[in-house]
Length: 343
Image (cartoon, rainbow, N blue to C red):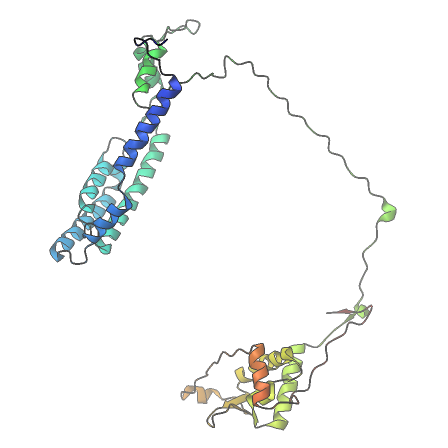
């Protein structure tokens, strides 16, 4: 049997859910949709390349004046009682409504960065300045607001109305009040830090091995391989010149040594001991005497060429130039001699 005169009282959780739903609805209503943003762009409300030139000049002048004024009055704006930064932001908000091109938007961003930096500096000064926030005055006013009074005797506690300050704070938040505890009413045991005992590992001296002492006779000095190979390639070129560049460096037996031959030959070309002539349509290598300082003074200019060879190019060069034997003999890989150290 139902009673038409009765009604259910909503729980606190229902109230909280209803408030969240209303808040989300308000936020969704206030947010512009993506389509509306595109419509503003298409209607030249946010970007207009054909904006009046006089208006753009006026905007630039206003922004530059505002930036200069902010930089000149930097110290005044950093004072705690100054509202110059707030006025700057308000004026910038008015100007940005007319900004429709990138140049003016850049000036607006520069002003915003400058104002933000000053705001950070001002906030830091407020934290460090004792006169900016008086803790004793704040406590005194807080006690007076809660219906209490300051007492000189430390043993006497004022009778404070905490509900008054709670009701005042509730006007500035939509969060539903909940029951919470402070540290005082709870019985909390302080945890003791357990200190572990550091154990040392005992080492057996008999198991220790002395490092091997190297003597001069155990080290064999090797000649610099790069210098040696560069000199050998120069001697081979002296015998085979003039010769095609690719027929000289390509080793059909080893792609790696082909790259090495190109590397060693580059030193001779850099030192102007080898000349590359391409007047015939093919790069021809010949040995030559390095130019003198007088020749460089007369206008002789060095030229650089960056060249790379991959595996496919190496195979094509072998087939195109019919290279079956390498002009530079294949170098044998070095083997390690047991018991010897190379340095």
